[in-house]
Structures are given as structure tokens and as C-alpha cells.
Image (cartoon, rainbow, N blue to C red; front, side):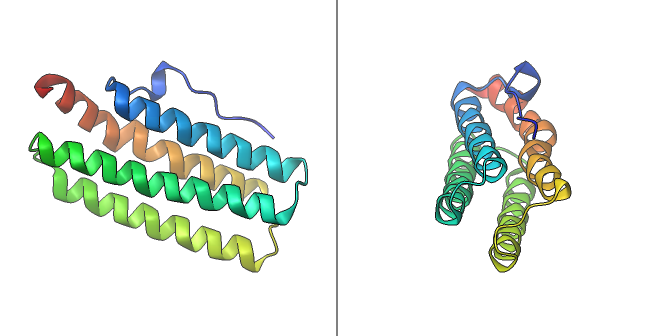
Length: 133
């Protein structure tokens, strides 16, 4: 199992968003390790729940910043957040239904789910916020 490593390529250059992203990377890595080390199902489920809950909180945090600074692409960004939350909830249901089994594809899905939004959509937000904060 590989771990996702936080580095400057994941930075959106807004410290408070970067701090949230670092925490999400930590939680993803904890979850991945818990699966690889065959920790108890209850522990793994709690980590996955925390990862999703922290992601939801983080999205709300970004949305508050977008509203505060009148981000012009707010509606589209918020819609993507909603889609990601729905996707994470579907993944969680699948994970629970399959008894906590994870394939390599599942690990790749989670990594992509966490990083793709940050690397594309959040980078644009970070650039914009850097200019107005």
C-alpha cells in the first residue's frame, strides 16, 4: 500500500485550505494503513466516517471563504462539492456492504477522489483567493 504524500504540488497557496487538505491526506493514509494492517472493522469504519465528515466540514469551510470573498465560480464549485459528497457516501455504502473489503481500485478511487478536486478546482480557487485576501 502506498501513502499519499503532502507536498507543494497539492498546495493551493492559502494556508487555511492547505491545513484542511493536509488533515484529509493524514486521514486517508490512516484509513489505508488500517485496511492494510487488518485493523478491526469498527476502527476502519470510524476512520472512513471521520474522513467523510472532515471532508464535508472542509467543503463548508471553502464555501464560507468563497462567499466572504465573492468568488465568481461559487455555484459550480459548490455543485462539485455536492457531487463529491454523494460519491463518498456511495463509496462508504459499498464498503460497508462488502464487509470492509478493499481492492487496489478502491484505494486508487479514494486517492483520486481526494486529490483531483484539490489539483484542479481548488487550485483555481486558491489563485483567486490569493489575489483578494
